[in-house]
Length: 187
View: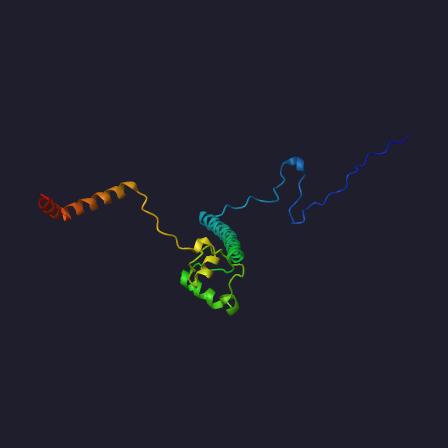
């Protein structure tokens, strides 16, 4: 029987790399690295890139913060103005004084709104002999909040007693001589 010579099954490899460098077998340990470590940048360039990154990040955060702040202000103004319009019927301008807001509101009213009054204004006249003044019907129809109350006496007891003492003392000194004269006449 004839023995066949063993032929290698491996295909032949090209002798050079695409870049023109010779291809060495890996087992020799002489394979060169295909990439080299990048050269470190200078300190100045590193600082500049960090500064740029900080600036870009700062600008981005400022834009986000500004947008959030503007949205909060818009929403708060909207809710305040919508609440004022719903409750009071007009929206005042906070930067203007009260009288300018009042004049602006009264100037924007239509005559029918300005001169109209509620139709359910009623009050009970319990006076038998006296009649209320002519303008009192309108005022009393608004309710008791608009009626003028009689002033109440001063409620602080200490100061009231001091005032009475002073007035009694003054009266005593004012009429002291007259009392002595009247005493001598009676005798």
